[in-house]
Image (cartoon, rainbow, N blue to C red; front, side):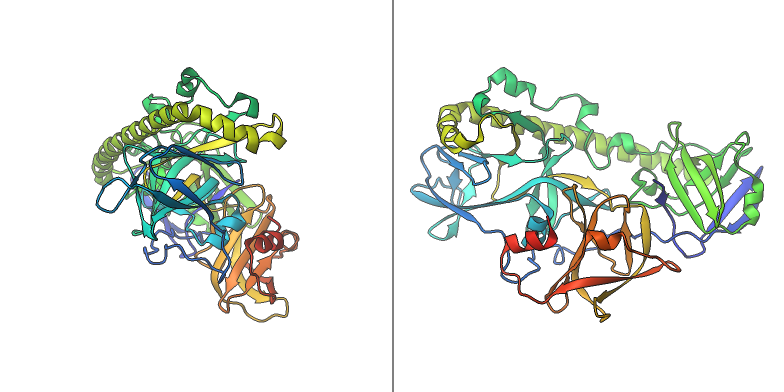
Length: 494
């Protein structure tokens, strides 16, 4: 699938041959701008439907006693003795009240109002989740805190078995997510809950530097290594979609160079106004497949990003700086990950007999069914998430107008796109243009300005007809009040 780049601003493309510059105008297809300008205030937890949310499960525990709690999904919460401190850092004694809840699908994410976007290297990503939780603790209605020497372990039951996720903690003051450590799925059975220390150690993250980078949104190896232009080749300049190509967007003055031996490229393209330009990763390392199209005419050729003499030194200096910084960050992430799993191993081995007794009762009806667990090492109360950052779907786009089924114009408080079968909820910041992948099963939902739920269902996506880059989305507005989270799941068919 091709990735659209640029904007409909008649951007100029400069094509050079042996120092001779020719200017050509290309009408680019408009692409969504980065959504990283949201303020912390806008990125706070804000349930969109009044009175509708995921309920907490409440527990009461004795602060000085090791405790294992079972949540209704099968998740296990292991609390060591003396795990709680007061605001002055003193150990808590007596009863502590725990409030706990989990979020497992886009309908849960939606009603919770928890932001599901993540900023990395100036780019905003959308979370694809393997499960999210919130845990709070109080004594006499006053919040208590986690003893850093006695971290709480949550082994969350999850339906996502991939190892592409990271653990993040939500900063409620700044309104953003902080990376904690690399997550790993643990596959286990009721009959095999006890694991040896060797088995647990085998599941700990690798300390290899390259392995530690595998799931970072933008890592050291993602950076574009600056290359100088070849004056005997063609060069031209285009706007770059930073969300799709972050390895290039950090630099200024990136040019694309076409080798003179490239048979599919002609200097005659400089005399044509093209309607669309797209990029795909090329077959060769560091190259890209570029496609120019207008009506039925289309041309594809390989091009490599390069820098002229003016911008090369600055790009090289920036590359060295970014590489050093990201390499340091990668090592720090690996250190945290190793530390987290050291705590996990110790706590799980300490609690194994208590855990086994509880599981024998709670899982009696589950036979030998496989369980997928996501392990959270809770160092602070609040919201934690096992997530994989993803970009907005691509494939189709158009200028969108929204009405109800009677043709009345709609305005929104929030608008979300979901691909069924993918555990992500894409927040649409700019309502005027809609992007989606027509090969997927999509559903669009919103909260209108008068607090009603509006839905554009999967079968309606199949009927979309785009004319002159425009389409009107007729949404079904629900007039019946929604009061429970399960009603939202049912209405949205999630």
